[in-house]
Amino acid sequence: MSCSPILLKDYLMKELAEPERRNLDVHLKGCPECREELDRLRLTEAALFSLREEEIPQRIAFVSDPVFEPAPWRRWWSALWASPARLGFVSAAMLSGAILFSAATRPAPIAVTTTPAPAPVQTMAAVQPPPAMSDAEIQRRIDSAVTKAVTASHEQEMVQVRELVSDLEQKRQQLKLAMAELDIYQRRAENVRLMSYDMPRPTPGGQQ
Amino acid sequence: MIFRAVEDGDLIRQAARGSVEAYNLLVSRWEKRVYNYLLRITGNREDALDLTQDVFLKAYQNLRKLDDHARFAPWLYRIAHNEAYSMFRKRRPESDVDEMEPEATQTGITVGGSSVFPIELSLAVASALERLSPDQREAVVLKIYQGFKFEEMAEILECPVSTVKSRLYTALDLLKTELAPVSARGVS
Image 1 (cartoon, each protein chain N blue to C red):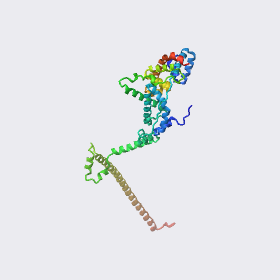
Image 2 (image 1 turned 90 degrees about the vertical axis):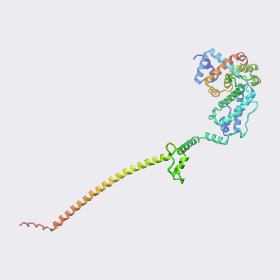
Image 3 (image 1 turned 180 degrees about the vertical axis):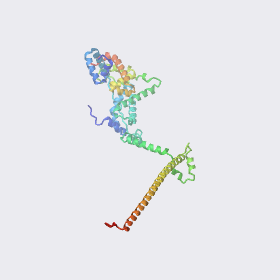
Image 4 (image 1 turned 45 degrees about the vertical axis):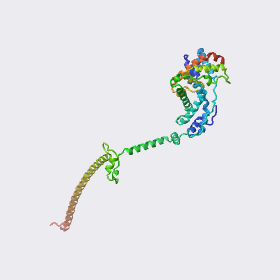
C-alpha cells in the first residue's frame, strides 16, 4: 500500500471501511512519514476542539397557537396519508375516477328520449352542441346493426327449423308406407291361414 | 450510552400529529447544536438565535413532509443551512454568497474561558477558521463540531460527497499549517 494523504484524512475522520482501515494500520506501522502526518492532523483536530460550544442564550419553546397549528383537514389528510390504509384509499380513488370517467364518456341511454319533454331531440341538441356524430346517431347505428344481426340469426335458425321439419315429414311418410306394407303382409298372412282351414286334409294311404 | 425514554422518532411522530409538547421536547434536544452550528457559520449570536427560532418554526410546519424519521438531523440542518444562506442573500444580494465572510468572530464565538485549552490556542483557532472560505468553514463545522458523516453533509449542503471531502480536506490542510506553531505548544 502506498502513502495517500486522502486515505490518512479518511482514517482520521473515521470514514474508512473496516478492511481499508486495517490495511492502513499495517501501512502506518512501517511508514514513519505517514505516522508524522497523521500526528499533525490529530493535533490540528485537537486544536479545533479548543473552541467551546456555547449555551443558547434563550431557550426556544412553542405554544399551542392555532396560527401555527395545521388546518384540521391537513391533519386528517396527513394522518390518512401516513396510515397503512393509503394504498386502499388510492385504489378506491382510482376506481371511482375510472367509473366516473366511464359514466361521463359513454353514450346517452335510449331512455333519455322517453322523458316527457315536448321535443326531446331538440332539447338534447340545445343542451349539447352537435358533435361530428351525435350520441343518438351512434345509438341508432348500434341498434340497426344489432337488429340486422338478430334478423340474420333468426332467418338462419328458421331455415334450419324448416329443414328439420321437412326431414321429419319425409321420415313420417316413409314410416306411413312401411306401416301400409306391413298391413298388406298381415292381411295376406291371414288369408293364407283361413284358406288352409277350408282345404280337405289328406288321409294316410288315401292315394287310390 | 445515554438511555432515552422516548426516541426522537416517537417525538417526531407525535409532533407531526400536532403535539406541541412533543415538539418542544424535540427542540430542547437539538436547539444547542443548531444554535452553535449557525453561530459558527454566521459569527453572530443574535443572528444565530433568530435563525435557530426560524429553523425550528419551519421544521414544525414541514414535519409531515419528513418521510424517514431517521434522517431528521440532516433534514433539520438542511433547513438551517438554507435559512442562513437566505439571510446572507437578503443582506448582500449583489455579492456572491460564497464570497461572504462572517462578522467579527470575537462577537460570536467564545474562546478560552473555562476551556481546558489555553486562550492563545482558542484565539488562534477562531482566527484560522475565520480565514477559511464559508464553504470550507461550514464543512469543518459539520464534520468536526457536529459529527456528521460525509453522506449526511452532502445531503445538508446539496452537493456531491466528493465536493464535501474536497472542501473539508483543503480546510484541514490550511488549518494544519495555520495552527502548527500554537497547537504544538497548546495541545499535548
